[in-house]
Image (cartoon, rainbow, N blue to C red):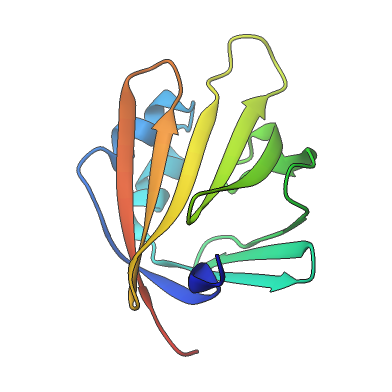
Length: 140
């Protein structure tokens, strides 16, 4: 799992990124922003405490969590959800459940492809929609 630790910068998104955001209920203005910004992620671990720092030119997020423990999250697009992280094989998997009935749940899987590449696969559960974003390792 330590292979995912470090700094990652968005390199590319597939052609389903906008459809994913729309399915998750993101409005058109925030989708346009989401399609145009570059984001970076830093994944850190100290003992059993993990941190995920997401930075962009629009908004930032700082998640602190322990594997398997549910916590409240406000996503970068403003959605409120219950989140849980787990390690599945060599992947760091982030589950998001909405507070309100009918909100789409998601599964976000961070996978290391090689020493310099990580993919984030975002799946809108029950909607048959998956998108992949590719990140490259960088030194800040």
